[in-house]
Length: 92
Image 1 (cartoon, rainbow, N blue to C red):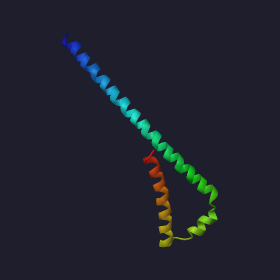
Image 2 (image 1 turned 90 degrees about the horizontal axis):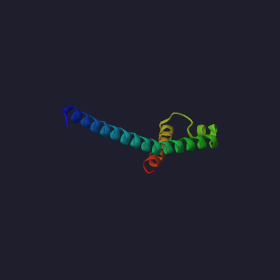
Image 3 (image 1 turned 60 degrees about the horizontal axis):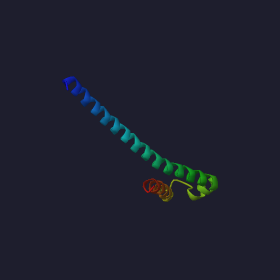
Image 4 (image 1 turned 45 degrees about the horizontal axis):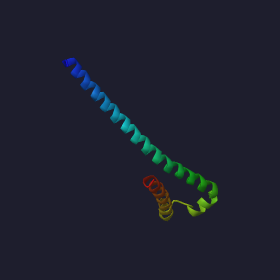
């Protein structure tokens, strides 16, 4: 085997390894995207359902002003909503 053939075979081995690493990374990225997509879809669906069912007047009654108590209530509702989405994406 000449030195040119040896270098060419090393280059082809490296190219195959790099190609394999790229395809592996892309497959992992797709699986992560797919898992997260379902959590996002569920979160947006629940948000749309709540928005369709709960009237604006009910929200104004629940969160009428910007006092600390109202802000804490809004934060608690937001944290509960966020917790649902995180739980959904982590355990699928």
